[in-house]
Length: 179
Image (cartoon, rainbow, N blue to C red; front, side, top):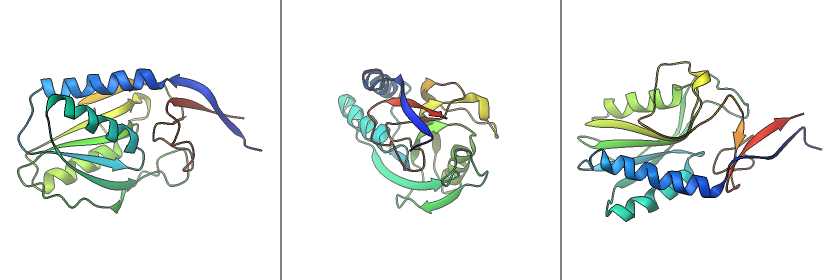
């Protein structure tokens, strides 16, 4: 028997789809840069990333895409404080305009690490887009350029986010209730 449940839906799939389209509208309206490289931070961003990319098509925008896998959580519910590169990108970033896409901005460590790394690799600019922004746990000073939803200090799953690699497949964002 599990010591948790995920029955409480916080953001349904219709709200997510609407907000993803709005985010791409915001990104495009801020000026479509030359040589845009969109980098998904895996595993959590994969659903959000895919939907963002499909929405770029509406604007006749065709960015390069790449992925990197970073870890700061392991199997726990709290960041370890150290960001580790599990899988790196292959795209050349010299003079590229980079958009980092992540599932949730929590401590800020992953995105701050990623932004610094992309700049060191020669990117002209680095912006960030997150599905969820949880401002209560910032360990480093970092704000996303584009954020889908602000959430309270809750542990959430679904739409790519997981608890111990479970529940990524949910089409919505749900609160994990620990018992």
